[in-house]
Length: 178
Image 1: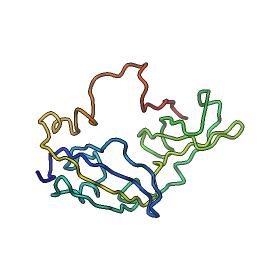
Image 2: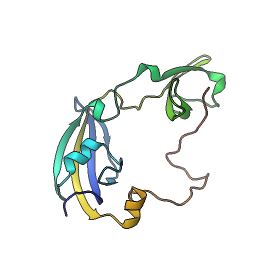
Image 3: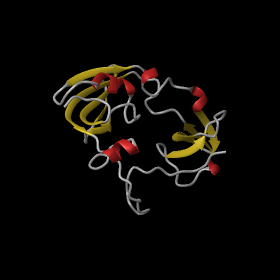
């Protein structure tokens, strides 16, 4: 089956920077709904469109087609007392960037010094050209439910059941910022 709109694509990937320094080697494949559902970068969809299982490619994506240019205006310095303890570099909080129209932004703690905390609202890969090594391992037709919801269900996909607060996972602590 060829990759086209409303197909579910399973891809093994390796992500590096433009100098080929490894950023991430997917321990699990990336599984996404193809066809403009914003489940992966548009340049990846463009590269894989019309391909089949077994296709391999190395694709370089420039910042403007990935996570944008690094914006120094997205860096904030806040009083430490506004954030919960314990506080560590790498923690993430949801807030609103100055000048934004109340759209929430995820800020990452990048530095802690005495009574001040540096928060960066840029995506961690902003400003970087990225190199993806892609290997298509499966292509299947999407279910009507997946198409209606705009994402993949099942293994490596999205789940709709409610998460128990005690479950561990990739959750970030959320704290509104002033």
